[in-house]
Image (cartoon, rainbow, N blue to C red):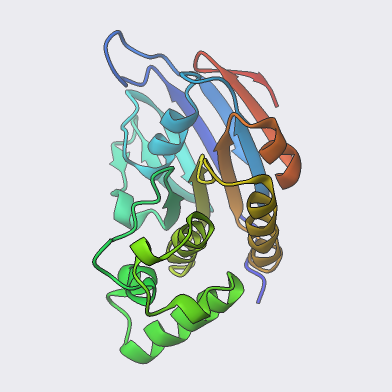
Length: 222
């Protein structure tokens, strides 16, 4: 069933990332569907995603997702990352090496009954064409298969937003296109905002949708 359309409104400024202080000042709205966050290294792409996810705390600003305030410095609101209903796939993928594919995917469903865990895992494994790999461990998988597992793990929790931080680095163009198409098919039904960070123009073209160009913590276009 298609979810209610969601959007994300973000206003951040003066984010302390490292020394010297990195300043980010953006006001953005992300509709359902893919938005590519594009720009050179150091532009603030990952910083933006980390603030939305709650991994970095802005000094000032406000983040609102699906009508819920996740962060508001003025009102003293700062929802913990695990309660923000956000899926996040990092460039490293961060799969648990000691767990099977199925247990990696089920990791975020700890509070559900076993029957529901198994059903959700089966559905998302099928959607990303990795159901036959469920008993394997990450070291037994190709790069493309690991990427599909990471996406499945992020999406099995039914997040309100999906954040992708250069997740397909090192994959060839054919694999990138195949995985991207499966993701877009999945989201045609779910209708959540997908923020996809990259500096690769070919990935940008494959995803379609809107593009935000960042440079030095500012929006250049988009």
